[in-house]
Structures are given as C-alpha cells and as structure tokens.
Length: 289
Image (cartoon, rainbow, N blue to C red; front, side, top):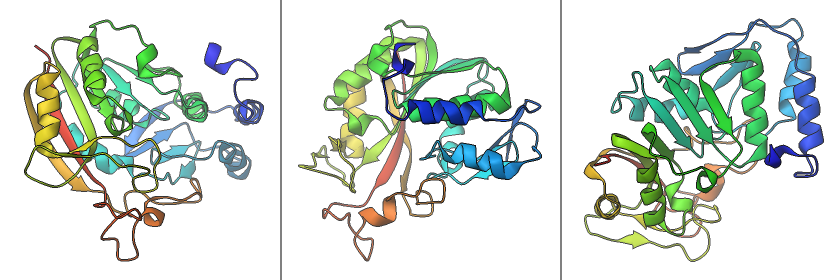
C-alpha cells in the first residue's frame, strides 16, 4: 500500500523491526473488563515489552498483548461504555473513522458487528493495529492507513462512527455530509465530539490551540451540533451523553509518556491553559433518510 512504502516515514524501519521481532503466539482475542486481550501469555515478556515500546505512543486501549499489559493514554473502555448502549451493532457493517489502533473496532465486533472497517492515516497506529492482529489472529476487522476523505463514497455501511474527529475538521458540515454519503438507507451515525456548554445556538472557534491541541475548529453547543446534523440531512438526531473529560480518563502513562490532558489545564483545572472551558464530550446519534 502506498502509505506504507519505504521512505514514507522516517520511523517505518524501526516500527517494522518491532513487528518482525514479535514472538509466535497462539492467536485469539476477547474483551475482559474492557481490556482487549489478544494472544496467549508468552515466555519472554521483557523482550515483547521492549518491542511494543518501539510503537509508542499507545493512545487507545487498554490492551494486553501476549500477556503484556499496555496502559494506554485513554481509558477508551469508558467511552465505549457510554456509547455502546445506545447503538445496536448486531449483524451490522460498520465504519470507524479516525480509528487509531483499532481498539474500538474490536469492541464493535464483540458487540455483534458482522464487519468493521476502520481508517486512520497515522502510520504508527497502523503498526499498533498490526501488532494487535499478530496476537489476535485474522478477523472481520480491517484498518486502512487512509484518511476518511480517501475512501470511495459508497452507501454501504449500516453504522458509521466518528469519535474525536469532528472538531479537527475545518468544515464540520462537509464531514457530516460525507458520513451520510457512506450510510445505507436508515443507517446510523454516531458522532462523538467536543462541545461547549450553553443553551444557545453557538460555537467556539479557537484562534490558536484548544487544550494544547493543534488543528481544533468549531466546538459547538449541543443545539448547534444537532442543527449541523439536521442540515446535513440526518433525521431524529439526539444527544445521548455529555461527559466532562477527566485526567483519569486521559493521562500520560509509561506507554504514552508525552504531555496529556493534565498539562493542558489550568492549575485548578477550571479552564484550559488558553482560558477556554475544559473539555467535555457529547455523543449524538442520528439516522440517514
């Protein structure tokens, strides 16, 4: 694949060497108390840990690969618990936009999805997915190292997830419209994104960074988010969850040793370091016509 050709990223040789060093293992996977457990426990966990450490930062999880526990930056299982009860995935074909290393895709399969296709252009996440797959074995879960915009717009998914993506789009309407174009008739969109508090139809457009994140645009109120969905042609849009993001859910760990949420908030955690309202995330569910 073009994205993985030699020379596309300076760390590709290091990442490939880490994958090549992974030991043979009995494959299989399960979800255990929110942890994606893949492969049987191997005899040399220190060597495996060293190989997996070459693939930092590990952001989505928690994971246990070959017996090695990976304490990821995000407790993604908490987000999944908030979202999953509102969506029926039984027998469905699912698209996961901005999938990272694919953690949520395994949760979707465990909840009954027939097939999951994920996309994310960040190559280290593709390497992490391949490490997971090495221990999990083949499945109906495919992660493509592509941007969402590079996927052919075919209306062949029953459910499309966009979690943690919308606020990185300069044109949120275009993103939502593209999601609708990928949905089959009466398909379901699951949109999880940052919002700002307030009852009105408003948004925050950060002039520089938001919570130390680059490339953040258009943080809507709940009202505006629902209006965006309506304008994109969705029906029965509703917000099913709003939860502040805490430094217990997103934090630095040994496996993601860089700055995380705690470094992006004021000392009393009442504001971001830029002076904005601290992160809170909403999950909206809507239907294609």
